[in-house]
Length: 320
Ligand code: F6P
Image 1 (cartoon, rainbow, N blue to C red):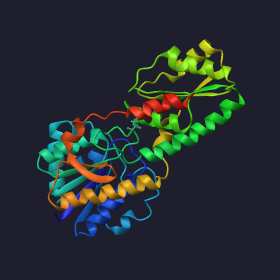
Image 2 (tube, rainbow, N blue to C red; image 1 turned 90 degrees about the vertical axis):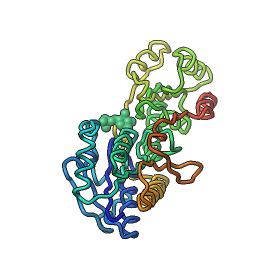
Image 3 (tube, helix red, strand yellow; image 1 turned 135 degrees about the vertical axis):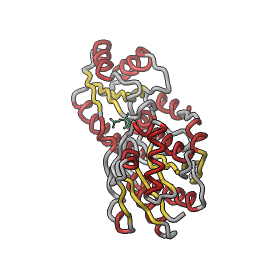
């Protein structure tokens, strides 16, 4: 393989730049040219290409977001769009592509591979919702961001003896919510993976805590459950405890990546290029037991990710 492309797609995630850097430098050190494709699949369809050299990825390791920018591209979900993508890649002399993104982006990667253009997926999303990998790039950094915010909310909740309902991202998954609930000592984590009972799981812990002298409460809600403003109103009504809702939003997607995310991205980028160099496409890179591995994209996408039961139990026990 003499020339490959790299793009970032879907929601950005801290560490995407580290992955781009790793792909570019690993390729160059194997005498493979790299074309960056800007703005995701939309850029592929519109020929937004940029030659990369080792210096093109200088000073990006510590930056959040993606220097290549990203998009969610409806046209690329159609067969005609994928065919056009393959043509554009061929015209530019690309023999393979590395796609850095979430599961929606992987579907595009699989379609490109099936149309004859070897493509490798690198999992990057703050949601950590890709089943075949234990961790996705960006999750660790998002946890740190949310932890900082939640610690601050705790300060003000304590000063005013309030309950705070705090909604975090994660799409249909509750990983961010469950992990920060444990790390920040929340009274409850309301996540899509676990049914909850308003009286038992929220009101009872608040009232029991009150009797024990607890002066503030944190309830973390995953966006996949949502409704945090209404939930705050219901809690205030049922407990008499003044309650505020905070929806943290896109701040969770930004910021300088943690060491763990930079390492993960660097390792995955190297692995992706190794696969392409060996003429292998239609694979997604993943981490399992701290080993970088790869799976057939379709197989990876069809796996089911389960929230570890231990995490769910911990959240309940420690909120006492
Ligand atoms: O997938 C990452 C994510 O931030 C989700 O947590 C959230 O549901 C979604 O993207 C938000 O997407 P957008 O940037 O289009 O608002």
